[in-house]
Length: 470
Ligand SMILES: CC(C)[C@H](C(=O)O)[C@@H](O)C(=O)O
Ligand code: SF4
Image (cartoon, rainbow, N blue to C red; front, side, top):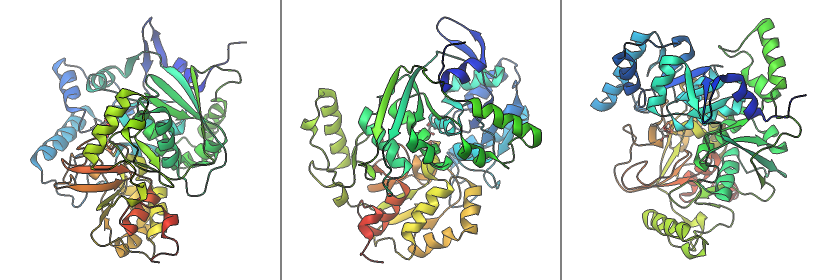
């Protein structure tokens, strides 16, 4: 009998075209492309007179640069980049979802909802949050532009075999703790670089209860722990999510696929290079106070930490710098931090369940005076579903703006970039300095925390609103 293997090793081994000492050449089953990291890659292959090897395994989506308040791209640079993507896709016969297409959206929301990502696949994209797709049991990596070129030309990629890490969420799951809070708690526990060089398998009883959307939020933020990728072994939740999606297999092929997916799990006794356990029983919603996703505290009783309380000099310096940028004083209770802007959206939390969670909190309530909230569905399909459920009306009645799909305020590559000083509660994944605007201070939060914060005008959880202004 062969030695027990992790699911990570199984997917890897299944895709090795050629093994080498330092790295293996892997076959790539799905290549996702967006306008920001692909222009030079297309230029590169054209310069060498090469064709795209498998246009049929490639999908392009416009997301980073598109405005979400209109279909008209006013910014000249954004327009040029989007037009270049369209021209490249046309020349190479690649399916392309343009701004205005009913399936357009953030690439990491779009590909799973079309059923393109399936268990056991390898997926790459020139984008760090490609890790999202691990939720479906795929090995999904973000790559750089030179790798995008390599994949376009050959449908393969040379990669060093990663170390493996098991992340076990154990314990009861408190009702107000969302998948976003779980992954923020993990990153706060191990640090923003704590999983460097690893691929994670999320395991244990808690992950089994979490929906596909929630698993995507968790896998999405895996890169914020420094990991290359993270995945969840497929189960019935995965099968139910995929059944009936446009690109999912049907008939006898579906039955064969499901039989194969059921075998796709870590063998008993397989060794991980590292194991991390996160006890979820005592968690409360998590929010960041600093300028990397690991600089986070529980909203329940958390305070802005004193930089001197960290043991490492590097951490102390990072905390000092973060507090200066964020304009925060040590000892301030997290829930006392006032907010003027709320962003609900992104590939972390722009899915239908995220919008439902926020709408449940906003229903019958109002966004606080002086607070601006924008709600940006992760895809046009999410937008349509939300409208079928009347969620858009809940958002607009509360005073929030209801937008088209795109990356929007997650990062400043479109006209949702914040011009002046702002303090933002954001459901996205990065709180780096200047990411949302030159003077923007970002606090990462879950969708329900974002909604409660919009109502309260300061960082707050839904529980804080009870007995309040309903
Ligand atoms: C623009 C792109 C390369 C970038 C990424 O790789 O993640 C962006 O999506 C982000 O979230 O910062
Ligand atoms: S939504 Fe944000 S994190 Fe996701 S791909 Fe777009 S910019 Fe990157």
